[in-house]
Length: 314
Image 1 (cartoon, rainbow, N blue to C red):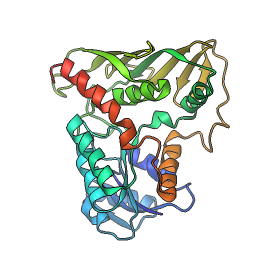
Image 2 (tube, rainbow, N blue to C red):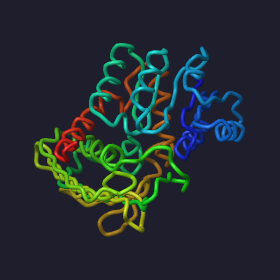
Image 3 (cartoon, rainbow, N blue to C red):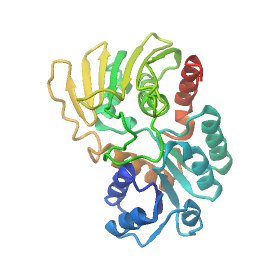
């Protein structure tokens, strides 16, 4: 299977690393914002074709699928362009930054019948998979999820500390991970959701702190705290409080509420959530099936985010 990658930044590199270890799949074209940086990444990974225009990659008959790791504001339009060009597509989270755009992608996927998947990586992290397996087996029921998503980003920089050409967003990007995971893990409809935000940054124009609370139909609760003002520790930390135990997930690591380490090495073929996400994308295309984290499966998350944005006056 031959793929193109659009977005040669920090996350794009993680996808290039992941695809390199998936048998029978290879990236044959890289698309980036600037010529010098894109050519450099292509050379580093031994990829012959590169461009600063997505249309160049979509014009290649041999390209079967595209991974989009581009700025958020481009996601929906580029995902639709890929599908219209007959290419399967995986778009990094978030699918869009408006509900209308997200629904347009879903409509295009239904019309074309191609695989369209969103990078909701938490569904694939072995730590969260381990919890999900226990929920499905009836061994564990969530009573509350307490989640902290903390970064120190008072300037417009990416995960590598490089200047960004776009502005990140706590609600439409970082909250999307947890809102989707909450619905996925509980398997229930979210019937109540509330949000508060702190002051907007004078230059970035975005809220730097946010608090979200949710409840499912059965009464399971989510408490989510997000910040771009937090000076360490950085990352997202999940506490699952349930009827038969407490589990704390830190990306691919998992411990009990008493800090006993849980071995998740046998949950899947890798401990790398991005690799597992990409493996699902490739497998779904090969098998002609809907992938986990398809656009149809995650659209509920974006409906909740849109409702929260309305509460904020957006």
